Image (cartoon, rainbow, N blue to C red; front, top):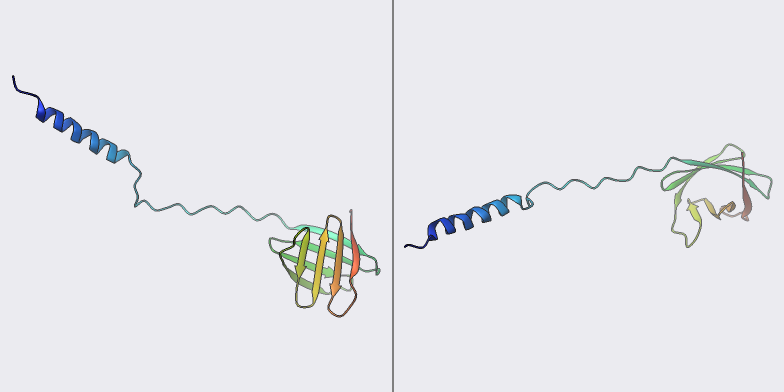
Length: 117
């Protein structure tokens, strides 16, 4: 009686090919990571201790400010240890919770409080 080497070898080869076909294709193009949608802009109105007010629209990384006299400024988000910090060459807005500090270059800062509509 002869040993059945050929069928055994062929079954081993078939198993290897089957497993190779199930393996992940390393050349398949990677799907780009989906980016989370930007949050909707948030509007906040601040009343300040100097009698002025600010209407601030917080975006993804900016704050668009409309001042009491109608002047506007776009501030860029800065790293803050706690709370918020947005700044431009001329203006600075910092805060935490409902309390904020608004300053214009060369003038004392005003303390501001977020108001409810």
